[in-house]
Amino acid sequence: MTTREYIIQTADDLIRDKGYNAFSFIDIANVVGIKKPSIHHHFPHKTDLGIAVIGYHLENLNNIKQEFSDKTSIEKLDSFLSIYSDIKYHNKVCLVGSLSTDYNTLEPEIQNKLKEFSDTMLDWVCDFLKEGKREGTFNFNEAPRTKAILIISNMVAIVQISRLTSDKDFNLVTKSIKKELLKR
Image: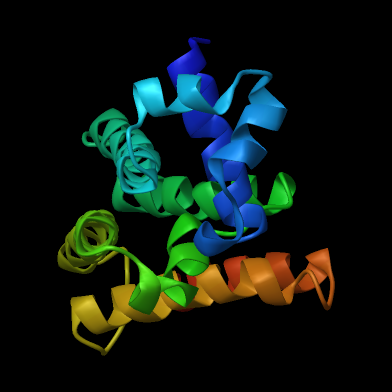
C-alpha cells in the first residue's frame, strides 16, 4: 500500500468512525506515522482528501457493478446486501450515512462527489430491481426508484441501529428485504 492509499484508508476510517468534521490531518499523521506536510503533499486541502475517499468508494462500487454485470438480479441484490454485511462485520457505518450527517457543512465539491456516489448506488439498485421485475424474479408495487431508496435507506439505517440492538436485527432486515422482493 502506498502512502497515498494509506492516507485515504485512514481518512475513510476516521470519517466513518468520527465524522468528516471531527478529524484533522494531524490525526491522520499520527496513524500513518508521517508528518502533516507529507499529507499536504498528496492532498493540499482536506477537501481534496474527502473527494479522494469518496472516489475510492465510487471506484469500488463501479468495480462491483462491472463484476456482477452479467449476473442475475438476485446475485446483484446479494452483492449489494453483502456490501452492508461487510460494513457491519467491520463495525463501520456506510460512507453515505456518515457524510450525510455533515452534509450541510461540507464543501460543495465534496457534496457533489457524495451525490455522484449516491446516484451511482441508486441507479445500480434501480437497474437490478427493474431487471428482476421484468424477469419475474422480483415482485414489488412501488416505482423501482422508490423501492431502491427504501432498500438503501433500510440498509444504511440497520447498520447503525443494530449497533444498539443486535446483529440478529441486521440479519432479519437483510433477509426481510430479500424475502419481500421474492414474494409471488
